[in-house]
Length: 204
Image (tube, rainbow, N blue to C red; front, side, top):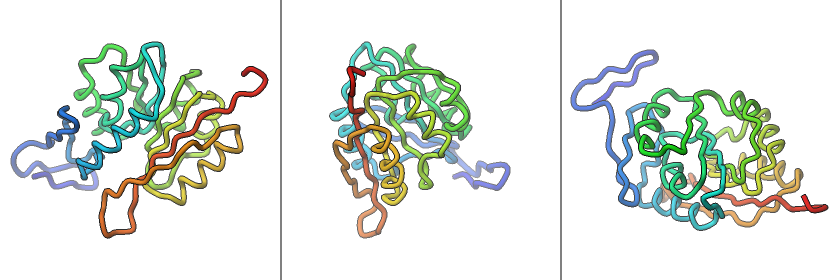
């Protein structure tokens, strides 16, 4: 039991983290870290990402807003390298534990809008799971400048998803699919996963 305070957290009893099982894999999730609480739907979301994202052992990908590593843990074995970007200290600590076995994973601690422009990468794919406010404009500019072949956008707000996808489409991306996931039945909340691919022109 953990009491989350404005500055410090107070551990009342037990451990300050939980262990979550997703598709047979154990994740450490601290009290202050974000994690999908509907585990069956979290499994469905991971399976869907693995189905739509076309990567191989030559792929270099970025997991922006990576949290405790829910998606990274399943993508890392399939790619050449994976970069996670996360601001929350608690989630970063969990990410480091949950992906400790992988030598091809790097974690950058900081805001996506600050880290992504400094990477100067041309990744094959970028996965984004931003907060409800959506993608920061600076992060969006850096994303589009990096011109990944594929974008997977995990969203908890249809309005900001529509806003951000519109910018991606205007920049030359094709929206292949949007798939909803009902993590909170009988509420208006819905998670969505959008899959976009860059339209190639003039051989680019």
